[in-house]
Length: 246
Image 1 (cartoon, helix red, strand yellow):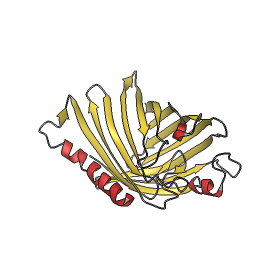
Image 2 (cartoon, rainbow, N blue to C red):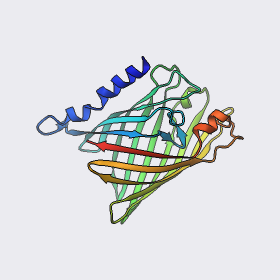
Image 3 (cartoon, one colour):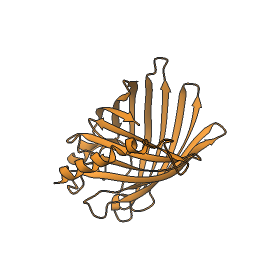
Image 4 (cartoon, rainbow, N blue to C red):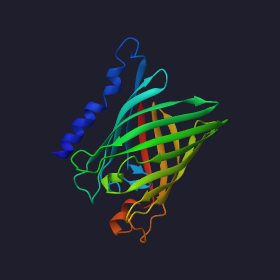
């Protein structure tokens, strides 16, 4: 039943960007719609597999309305599975934010609320703060993302993700990008971890293909994820995916 429900939800979410562009001027309230769909062998978030080490495929979709002044709002959805929390089978994330540029420095500030249908007491919210600077073909983004309530519903736990995201596009339009971050986690029994990834992506036939390596410093001594089950979802891995933007 959960699989049927999830498939129905994504079947409704994926066509939304297409329906949004059926109007003559493609606008609503001085804003326009965009969307994306992605399929991948895994869904890795800050070094952690969100689909139980690839036990189920990663299927994601999003739709965003963006105002002419850079204010935007949208909805993200993805398959999700944690063996330690069997009630979780998807994540849905509404978000709202503002992006723009000041003196050649781009910024993007938004609220993202993580919701897990079918599971109780695990929803939480983060404030994403990102700034970027381009140097020719080379670009660097920095990120500061604190939680605004109990992390994953654990009483008294809070976190801040610090990360840097460099990227460059070669003359053949091949993009090399990566990320190095630290997910700080505070509270009784909590412990943070370092995470990183490096990959290449290329746009072909209207799709974007991406091959990426993910890893962390989580080992058997980690207070939160040092168990065999925890190490399994934080293990090093290659992830292949392709996406379509609308």
